[in-house]
Amino acid sequence: MEVIERITLNNEETKQAIGLNKKINKADNTYSKIYLSNKYNYFSDMPTFVLAYEKQKLIGLTMLYADDGPNEEVEVHLVVDPEFRRHHVATKMWGHAKQIMLQYGYHKWEFVSEKVFLAKNPDFLANCNLTVVKEDSDYYMQTSEPVSIEKTDKLNQVLAVKPLTANYVAQVATAHSNAFGDAIATSTKYIKNSLLDKDTKSFILLKDNEIAGYCAVDHGDNEDYFFGLFIDKPFRGQGFGTFFIKKMIAILQKEGSRVFALNADVTNKAAIHIYEKAGFKILSETLYLKSQES
Image 1 (tube, rainbow, N blue to C red):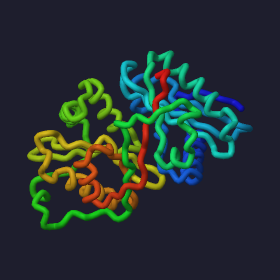
Image 2 (cartoon, rainbow, N blue to C red):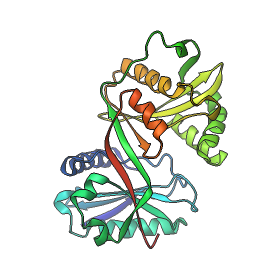
Image 3 (tube, rainbow, N blue to C red):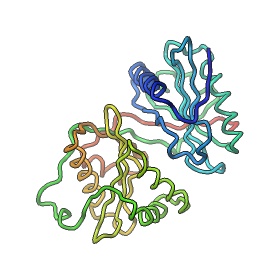
Image 4 (cartoon, rainbow, N blue to C red):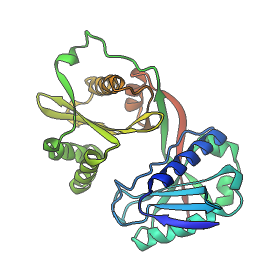
């Protein structure tokens, strides 16, 4: 077995990674799709991917999502081809991944899994010395039958949804910083990167030319994935969120999109309600796992 590190993936590696992800989802009845870019990572030169090969076949993939500085946690996505599990593939990839994080000053990390996987593998947590972070989990939600905006919706006359352009970056970054509690430099980098990413389409919600909300959409092979969505605090509780996501879906449908997905914090009942009103349904629960060494 050969284990290699990559800052970014080339076209062939990306194709293999997508294929491996699909194979694992099918075998485990899971839905997670690993983000195959380092676009949002804090250190642009940090190896983001660890790949395990057996005779030129990709059998394992690790992705380090480190979108903030070394004082924050790294999300570790680590998967192994079901045919090669219990062959120490994960252990060897993790050895590389851990050294990468320590080299760049990261000492805190958590692994991403799904509730259905842990239910099917009850000994997994004990065998790997991991525990579930109880206060931190997400619902994976999807729809292929979204709810349309009614023509009589008065917000049609009040709000506008447009693609993000460079002249709005500063305003959106300020609103993003307020919404998520990130440093303004972190939010600015995040918004700029989403604007520059050729596979991402970013939208803004405007009320009287003032930023009321923002969302980015990643165009995948089988679905459009919404992320970074927020409504700025002064505009909440007025139906803006439901209108915003319905409007984005309508725009994307005209461009040929058919399936839409997102993740919502399990404790964020207001957001879950908004997504359900737009037609989304809960399909899976994403869990985060920690080890004592983190």
